Length: 146
Ligand code: SME
Image (cartoon, rainbow, N blue to C red; front, side):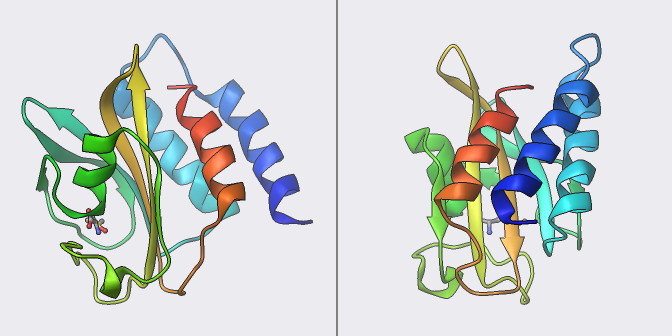
């Protein structure tokens, strides 16, 4: 099965899984694990916008930093710019926040409602250049289910 086919199955499962009757944290917890089931990346998780910063939410992977300022790191930059950021080599990204020494590439997808970002989905890989426009397209559709 190629990557697009795996993402299509993931999206179908997510449509059944995401429950509009529960809060964001519950849905993020299940979505995090669902992504891991199909794509077992090094770190998969959410940071939620809480007041003026990003705060660690549900995740699957090693312990991570709990707070990220607006515009800082890959996550804070994706929040500020409200656009997906793919980093092929995190060691070359100015201001990258290294939560794990094993991360080499990263994708961060903002989650927004009415064009206001309420969280970001962050996925780290121990491989370089692990993410491309296929990941971007499907992960952007996925976070719209939240
Ligand atoms: N690398 C991220 C921080 C979060 S961890 O990767 C889990 C960043 O630069 O924003």
